[in-house]
Length: 121
Image (cartoon, rainbow, N blue to C red; front, top):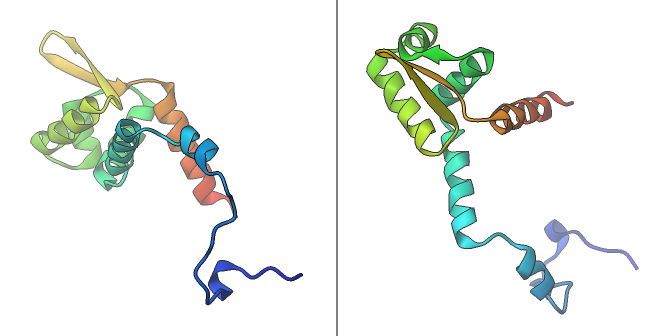
C-alpha cells in the first residue's frame, strides 16, 4: 500500500496514534517553552549575535565592544543588559570598568552548533 505525504493528502488527517499521552508527558512545560522562546528571540537580533561572537573571542568591556561593533556605548550596553537578563552573558567589575563574557560554555556550543548546521551542505 502506497503512503501519501501530507502535501498530497486532500482529506483531513485522522492522526496516527491512538494514545498521545506518552508524548504529551514528554513535552516541555509552559514556563520552559516561554523561556526557550525568549532565548531564540535573543538570538534573532544581528547585534546580539555579533556581541556573542565577539565575546566568544575574549572577555571585553563596553568600550571595546562598541569599537568592534561600530556602535555607541549606550546601544551596546542596552543589548548587553538584555543578554545578561536572560543569562547569556555575565559581567565582572574591576574598578570602574565592567567586563563582559559568555555566561557559560553552553552559549558558545549552541552558537557553534548552529553555525555548523548552517554551513553543512
